[in-house]
Length: 209
Image 1 (spheres, one colour):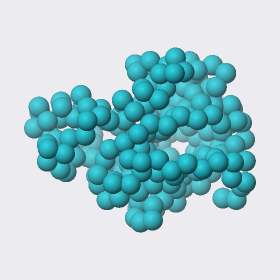
Image 2 (cartoon, rainbow, N blue to C red):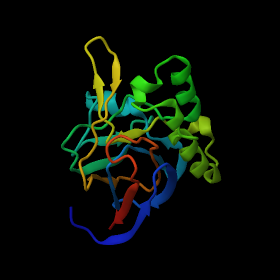
Image 3 (spheres, helix red, strand yellow):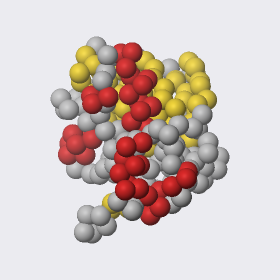
């Protein structure tokens, strides 16, 4: 997708980042690992991305080029205009990882099966903490951070409804997704602590006119 670059920022793994987008601007997110992405109406931060409305309004659980991120008020926040993740699809089922969620998985004996690594590698925080920290200055409490659009998280949904956390990720040098703002937005993302293929890398965020 062509466009004039306004700014670009490289982010390390397991960190949160928030930024403004004007209507008509686009953000390109490139990574080899999971990116938890949320957005809010900049003029009314109570209106925010909603996983359920995004799925129900478009009658699908996997979204890609041409699909939209929808708010709980049924307004279109963003449109996906480019998606180069060919190895799998993005997720609208999982919420955000967190230290507590990791600890619960360990207590239930599900840590190694779910995350594919030993307990000694449990990260000190997850995307919940990253997003809550970066959004707190905007007056958005942790419990008001919506479940995200999990970019590059290929979840397997089995016929019985079981969710399987796969380790399919973009191959080097990574894939990118470009989303166009359909209103003035506050956007935020977390570079996941996931350490699947490419998980030791962070992300590059580019805003385009």
